Image (cartoon, rainbow, N blue to C red; front, side):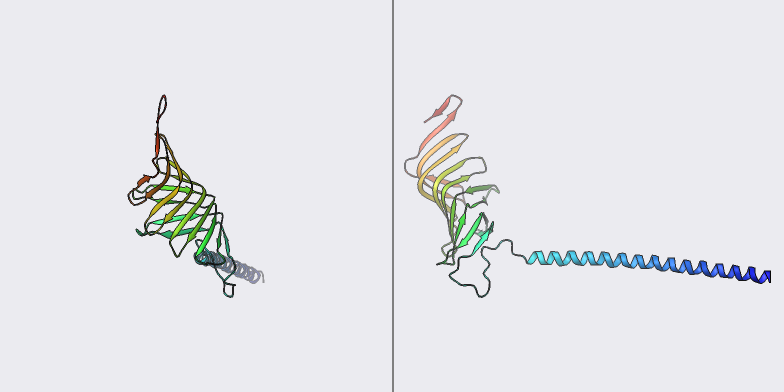
Length: 218
């Protein structure tokens, strides 16, 4: 009887140990499978978010929904506007607010527009203004009040109003203009700035003042 009890006891222990090993092995396998499922869900979620993000229009001017009144003025906050000129160079325009004109959907009114344009020498010029009007039909951008244009070398143009003709890639103004730089300043009555060749022509008998260590020389 004692030998049978010992044999039974040993067999029972072996069975219990095998069962525990199987349970432990199953748990380990289940954890591994759960990890794979969890990682797969994370990857799938990331892919879904990225695809959704790509579909979100972050460079639209005005997004008109179906059934909107065509006379309603639409507004977009902090838009980024990209358009190309005749050379397919990108002109980047930003503003605090953009509104479509109620009477003409091709006209967009901009609040505090600013932006930049890459010249042929791969350098950027920057501009700022209080107000802007973009006419998509005429391909004209008007900058109005407190207009500043800054060149790559730090030269700045100050004027009240100017017009950018997209098709010709020309900036022009008929208002008084002041050009300041480390070299001095020029005052004139209007200017024409050809962005293709960086050629600037001041109008109205411009007055030049050159700077030196002893002061200005006119």
